[in-house]
Image 1: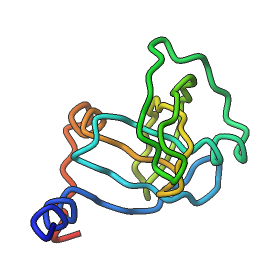
Image 2: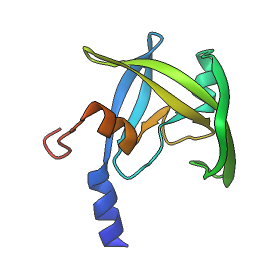
Image 3: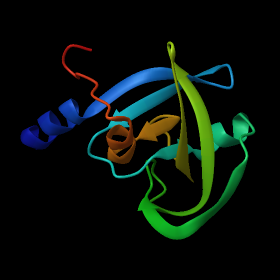
Image 4: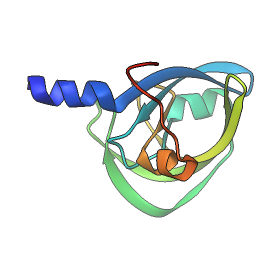
Length: 117
């Protein structure tokens, strides 16, 4: 268990971002294959969604078990002076408002220097 916790500790980077002039919690997770947005955040910020082209189930990031992914949302966000737009699957989660996975890191050639940050 300790080895798994150590690996996870170095794979996660938590920060704040701004979406529609609101502060939101963001996690960058090098072990995740998905870009995810909280369904609560999408609803509260009245972000427009579209149907997901490839429906699938995901282990939910809260206590509700599996969740069916049926919607996509395009999110414009800022971290300090950095601005970006990302497409995320909309899921019920309580861990954060937006979770960016390996695909976003690869597309952006992103390195977050976990220990020094």
